[in-house]
Image 1 (cartoon, rainbow, N blue to C red):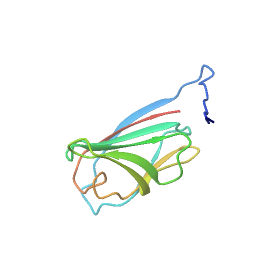
Image 2 (image 1 turned 60 degrees about the vertical axis):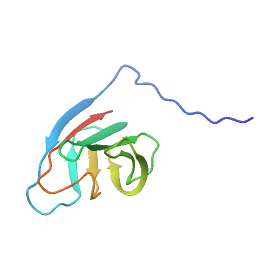
Image 3 (image 1 turned 60 degrees about the horizontal axis):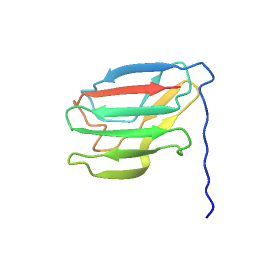
Image 4 (image 1 turned 45 degrees about the horizontal axis):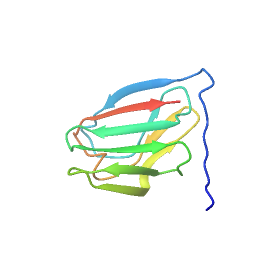
Length: 108
């Protein structure tokens, strides 16, 4: 049986950023600049009781989404895209909803 495994360590440097986002206008993808390249991002829709997570190694616009009731789904579009200085939250209709409070955390 063959196994493939990858792992990376922090080497003593860990970045963390937390925040919230609320847009009362038309829902759209948005960019958050945190000053580092995240290795993990979690975005929680507090009003919609769901969240999405992106882990280092996932493709752009991918994430794992948990919906109300505990149903998980892999998103292959409209998820999270990481850049050298932050990340973009895509326009997923469960997560990124007009006038609903989002909270997020990113680790690098």
